[in-house]
Length: 279
Ligand code: NI
Image (tube, rainbow, N blue to C red):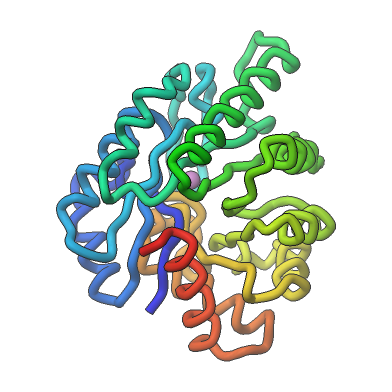
C-alpha cells in the first residue's frame, strides 16, 4: 500500500474522469490526499472525498499563486493558466475545514517563482508571508497538519529560508514541505525542527542529481511520497498527465536511491502519512 500525499484530482485536468482516476488508484491500493489551492478547488476536494468511505481525503487552503493574477506555464504537461485572485478568508476556510474528510490545511506557503507582472516584489513577498502566517494560525487553532508549497526565485533557495523563518516564528512544525526543492542544509534544518519532506516524480528525472543526493542523505523515516498530479509525471510517464497510481514510480526510485526494498519504502512512508494526517 502507498499514500499519494499530494495530488489535485479536483483540478480541471480531471474534470471528465476524476472518479475513474480515483478508482484506478484505490484499485492499486493507493490512497490519496487531494489538495485545494483556492476556495473553489478546496470546496471541490471535499465534495470528491465525501463520495468515498475510505482512502480519499481533502486538504483545504490558499496557494500563494492565487494572491495575484499570475501566468502559470506548466508546459511539459501542456497546462497553462492564469491564476485567479483571492484574499485568504480565515472564517471561510475554517468553515470548510469542519468536514470530517479534511485532514489538513494547505497548500499554502511561499512562491517567488511565479510572480505577478507589474507588482513590486516586496509587496508580493509581504502578502505571501502574511497569508502563510494566517494559514498556520488556522491550522494551529484546528490542530491540523499543514502542507507547505515552496518555490524559490530561479537559481536560488530564498523561499526556503523564508519558510523556515516563518515556521519558527509561528512555532508550528506539524507540517510537510511538499515537492521538495531546497538544498540539503535546509532539508536537515526542517527535519530537525520536526517537519517532513515530500518528494514527487522529479526524483526520477535524469537531471535531478541534487535532489537525488538529498534523498540519499535524509532519513527514510522523515519522508513522504506524492505525485502533485496532474503535474510532474515520473519517468516513464514524463510529459503525460500525472495521476496518483504513478506514485509507485516515486517510491521505487527512492528505494533504489536509498538501497532498501520497495516494500520498506511503501511501509515506512505509508505509516508516516497515516499518522501525520490521522487517517
Ligand atoms: Ni500541488
